[in-house]
Image 1 (tube, rainbow, N blue to C red):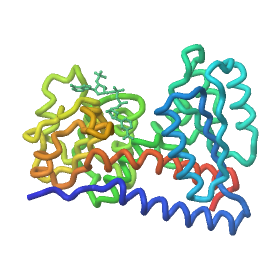
Image 2 (tube, protein in one colour):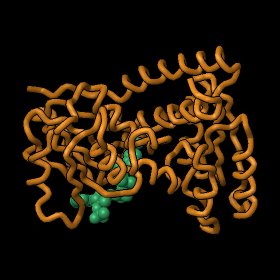
Image 3 (cartoon, rainbow, N blue to C red):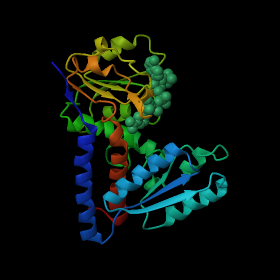
Image 4 (cartoon, protein in one colour):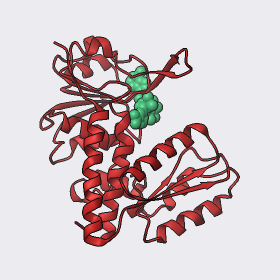
Length: 297
Ligand code: NAP
């Protein structure tokens, strides 16, 4: 049996349409829209393309969008002052600092300077703490894990009581998604195991998973025989494994997709699975922030 493909591209469109409606409701109720600033330091081509995509998506939803480009040699103190300016700006509800920053700037210091109530990336320690507490404490779940949870829920996968195995323990994917799936509440209530490079028998853990979330950054790490028949497989990995004749990167996930889709019940492709969800969830967090700052729905 071939698995049902969980299309992040399609789910993104559904969520963006929902957000567009919310922005309209917000305009009707408060006469205002969500405001997002993207701060780009320097001219890293990958960062420029990410920021451009974020800006385009924000504009398509009717946000107030500020693009603040700064030279690569900006002093750390000036960048901190800029963040403080946006922290105080009532038209701005989300502040994004595109990473990586130049070496002379302390990234942690900069991210920690963002007002946690405008930290729509969800990386500020206050928001990490809120995520750990769970429930109504959570203001901004980090975007990639939030996207993974949406894919699981919107694909109709049962999470309550499910064995979830997360491959990877990074601060941006593995650890937060593990915490989110273990929380008490809808779309969660799972029994979660985290595995990593020191795990003794990776295969035996993966084989138990009703929901297997793989975020290792190793192409084809997960073999088809490690997948429990009928499992939902979320492949977060994005690995450049070559170039097409036209100079486009060939991407592969962490799961041997062609064989895995013959065993899994549901599976995300790479590209087109988790990838499109990250920016979508950033937009969702910005809308959430705007409601929060305006006084609620
Ligand atoms: P990371 O910080 O490099 O963490 C990778 C994790 O995987 C680590 O915890 C590591 O274990 C574990 N790992 C690596 N090789 C392993 C192996 N052979 N066996 C078991 N565990 C192994 O990576 P990340 O930032 O979480 O990203 C993971 C992947 O997701 C990357 O391909 C990245 O490009 C992709 N990603 C995609 C999106 C998106 O689509 N929007 C967003 C973020 C990341 P140790 O801790 O023991 O070293």
